Image 1 (cartoon, rainbow, N blue to C red):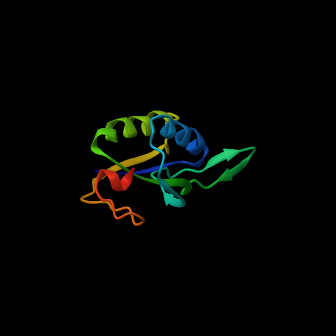
Image 2: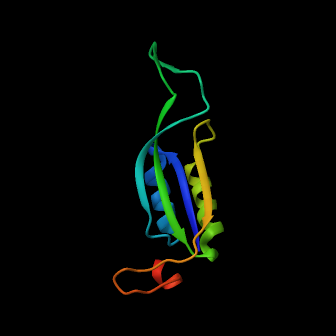
Amino acid sequence: MKKVEAIIRKSKFDEVKKALHGIEVNFFSYWDVTGVGNEKQGHVYRGITYSTTDIQRRYLVIVVSDEFLEKTVDTLIKTASTGNVGDGKVFVSEITEAYRIRTGESGHAGIN
């Protein structure tokens, strides 16, 4: 099992959620987060300069079986991308075990 963590633009969240449901990734957690990016300049909109050092994003955590990893990561990258600086990051780490609290099921059965 793998844990996929993704930091994406808030504006792309609905599209990403729909795409994940489309590949049968039906459960994940998410939070609104603020981060600091690499871009050092502000953006100008209608003559007003806005700081881009503090960036509002959405943080997703998804636990998938090994068979779903590549499809999940590909879906995240494809749907969260705008092609601009600040699209986000995806991290993958190993999960050694998962348990469903209600039934005590573990492993693959514990996450589905």
